[in-house]
Length: 256
Image (cartoon, rainbow, N blue to C red):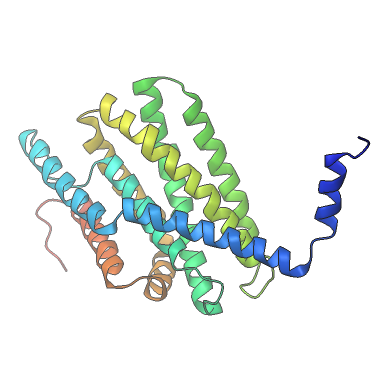
């Protein structure tokens, strides 16, 4: 009658052996791997690239009717491709990965996330606010970006051999997974309902701004991508750059 369950729980916590703690860590890693695998099957890169190609065709047809010579995916397609890009990097990060590749994966992911967040805050979220009005989900997304930036700053202060490096990156993965799930199930479907033909124009704005943000980091992106991606993702990145160049190139100008 006098025993207190909470005291027993506290004693159990203090008396856990190193083996039990390691088992808990391994369980968390396995759960995270299963979550990533499930998301990757839903967010298939091939499917996303096919969706992007379809979006390009649709946008081209719309803009041909309005006399504009530009082709770029809808903004919601671009956001989904960004998600797929980062999830692919997450999936390649393993405890036993060589330190040089770990650094490349983390560097690539952090830069991609920073640019993605800035593009959303500058272009997508204001457009959603205007089209659909204020929402708790938009406010939550901005706060999640702030948390993400703090973890990225922490990562950049660490080396791949640091004991906290892997756990900090896994914390970033967990936060991003929640953020992606919220956007893909709530914000993006809503955008496609309320913004209609505006999605293509916003996609063009995002492409132009993305190239501006990427330009100072071109060498870093190239070097880390070589170590991070198989051929499929290299082709996807190249395709995105070609689309951006076509969008920004002045009409009638010859290639030097």
